[in-house]
Image (tube, rainbow, N blue to C red; front, side, top):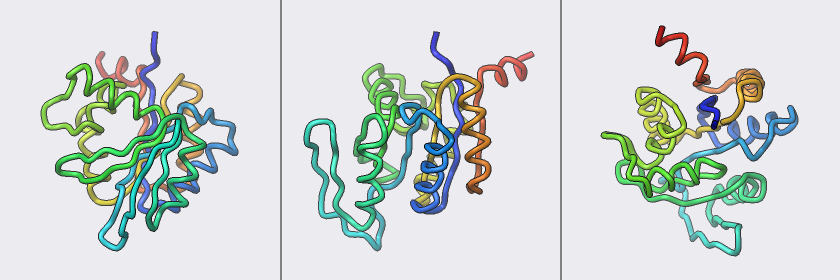
Length: 179
C-alpha cells in the first residue's frame, strides 16, 4: 500500500528553495522522497539549452548551477513544456508521477501535467490549482512524499525555512475531514 502523505512548500526564489533542500538534507530526510519544481526560464534569463547524458540532465542558463546541483542529488529529472505555464524543470520522484499520470490518461479537468502528477499522489485539486499558480508566477515547489513520520518531520524543517506557504496533505487528515 502506497502512502498518500505529502508536504508542499512554496518559495519565492530558487535560492530559498535551495536552502530548504539543504536543510532537509541536514535533517536526514531521504532525498529520494523529495521533488522540486520551477520554471525553466524567465524573461531575464536566456536558456542556451538542455541535454541528457545517461541519467543526468544538464541545464545551461542563469540558474544552471542551481538546477545542476539537483540533478545529481534527487531521483529523476525532466523538462516539460506545459501550455499555460511554460517551460518547467522537475527533479525528484514527481517526474515519474507526472509521466504515470500522462501515460494513464489520468489528467483531471483543468489541471496541467504537473497538476495531474500531484493529484495522482493524493493532493486535493484545490491545492493543486494553487501550486500550478505558484509555478506560473515563477515560484518554486519543494515537495516531500512518504510515510507520515517522515513527511511531518519534513514539514517541521520546511516551516523553519520561512516559505511563502507550507501545506501538509496526509491520509489521516483526509480520513478525519471525511467523517
